[in-house]
Image 1 (cartoon, rainbow, N blue to C red):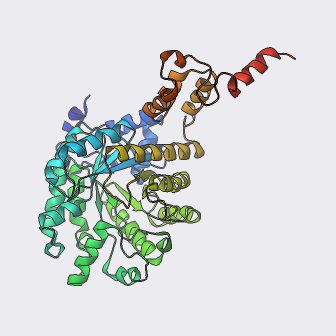
Image 2 (cartoon, rainbow, N blue to C red):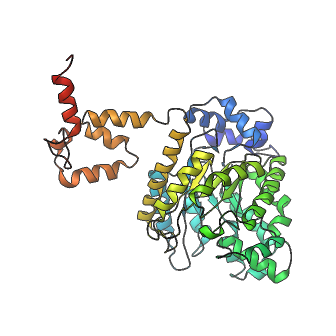
Image 3 (cartoon, rainbow, N blue to C red):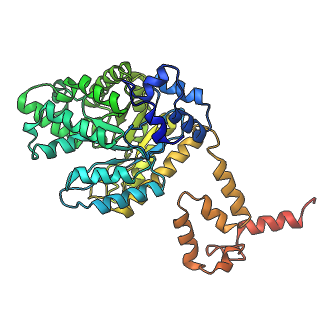
Length: 446
């Protein structure tokens, strides 16, 4: 049965969320699909969804989507951020970034466009995507009030959410846990508020001296999510933007509110995950994960990095992948990639590839460390292929087959060298694999 067919059966259901069905004891087609690809039982997947520890972001309007899950019981997932800016905006370029992200292993993609025709860009991305698409609706909301945040009102906010839900957006990042009473904590920071959505919300709250409208309208937001099965990614407006601000009062005050909102979403059968930092010293990552699990009832944790140093400009994909690996090992369910352009400019397709691969490595290493089912199978196959000099097999098993083949072929491009028992590093006389094999061959039984 196709996704179109099984979605049609749910047309008249008043609440269409995976969490609602899981609580009723139903194993949906999406749960069965995920159980199969994750090598788990369908009942385990259903149980984890019902407990709120696993989400399946799958908007009912995104009909060409291939279901995937985010949760501690599953393999670590990675998200790729793409999107235009006011300076650079092209529908074709964003679709190309999407294709590169999916090709190299992104499990979800967020469209963070802030420039150009936002509706057209989003529509083309969703239509071209087999993975769930997330957004930060605040960017569209600001666009719709002509970039004057003071004109923001609840009706405009909810209208944008409804429109994006109808387009097929599978999860929203909503900056709803940052409250007016948190502002005094922000003044004590080195870098203030580094979240775009959070800084805009702060401007609005300080201008009107009113509570965060996303917080006030949270029940209305949940009603939209119920109708289209949009998952919520509760945004961390007060994530630390430098090591000096990590694990401070502002960050954890917001996290506690996110935990309360996550419980409200759960009670309304809306799937929810929690966003996390940011910039965090390596020795503080485990504490951050444990506090999120404590405050948020083990809802899936989705973190940006975290970066473990502030001085890796141009190499922040590496600095953040180090933190991401530790975070996933300690219990984070999804990692938001960082590209080499972080802090420097808008990523292009090449940067997307570099970010994806850095995070595929981090996620895979964490899955091995956590002992996830069959996580090390490809590693062992790669070891066998290396020892047997099966070059084409090595390329196939690599996380980036194109790069592996490219580097090998720089010095030895001819096909005959795909059968050679050496590479350009050691040559035919100094290969340790070959020497070891000769030893065992010549002295077998000695």
